[in-house]
Length: 420
Ligand code: EPZ
Image (cartoon, rainbow, N blue to C red; front, side, top):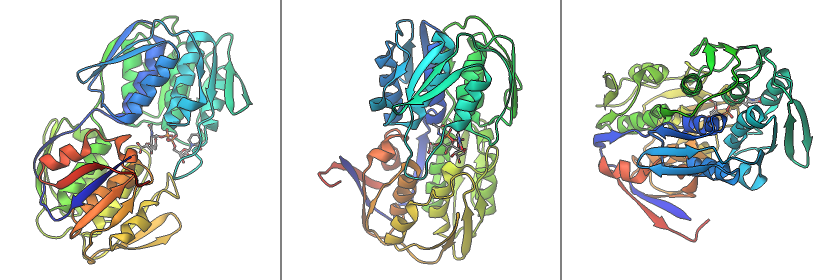
């Protein structure tokens, strides 16, 4: 078990390179199951969730190996359509293998994913989509068992916009006979990246980047090399951390077009942003303006940046309202931030953040990936020493986070601990 020891108060300055997108990689890697042979996904982050997904594919007979920042996935040897509980319990996104297995083998047995720190995380939209494509779904002994002698195209409307359900059903629809029209599909950049990789493999998809995807099924898909997109959530985390420290930081390997909502809100808060083609320079002098946000599906303000925004609003001199409409209980970071001296009141799925109260160092506990990030960036500006426990949550989604912050001037180190 590791923990991070942080001495707050350092101004962040310099350049940081943003890694490839975790949430895109967790859709692109399973899709390699659709194209037997050597697939290469470049700009893949070396993070725990990618290792977990790679191990799951290897348990099915694939071979996954990093070559520098590129992940080679040889899916020719896949000989099983089962995703065992011991893998799926580690990461909900494991369910993304269901669509590709169904399309390749006509059958899949995938353990039902559990919940997570901020909610039940149902998969009903995934299963309804597969049934629409002609699969028979049964749930037995904690496993989803899907069988489809032949997948047939159909019209599929998602009651609510779901990133995972859109990705999973799309990877089955690309090999379904005939036409599939998916409406109210998610249009997050990670979904678009998956659709673009499938097209490169030989799939026929129209409407990419919109909420209506039209797919003409094909018989075969071929292995490809595909460039993963930069991680917009990691980028937002570093933009906010730099502004909180009143620093001056250049982010490299970012797509500003994936960050419109975050950029707009940061400018509303008074942050100076110099937007370039694949770099963003962030500077902050003085005190940020209190700025309300409400999370929404893309291109709205991302729920994955909600916790970090609460941390940022602690630096203002006024009150801000942060509402999460995607996950109503994704606020486990609030009591931990209060340990650092934050004044926050909860009202249903909103946090009212009162700035003007300087933070002081404390020991805090990570509960989930983005909550941990908000604790870390708050500790970076808290006066004195802080410890962030259960760093394995952060390692799921951020590559070498303490090295990246150290290079920007933060006083942060990782130590082994028996503490849990
Ligand atoms: C993806 O999760 C991301 N994870 C999450 O990022 C992100 O918070 C989420 O999308 C929303 O943007 C990955 O891409 C691996 P959803 P996903 O299906 O696909 C409900 C992070 O920190 N829903 O878009 O699981 C669901 O409960 C992680 O990187 C159903 O009701 O999210 C939620 O309220 C955390 N039934 C809403 O839809 C379903 O079948 C959106 O969830 C599926 C989802």
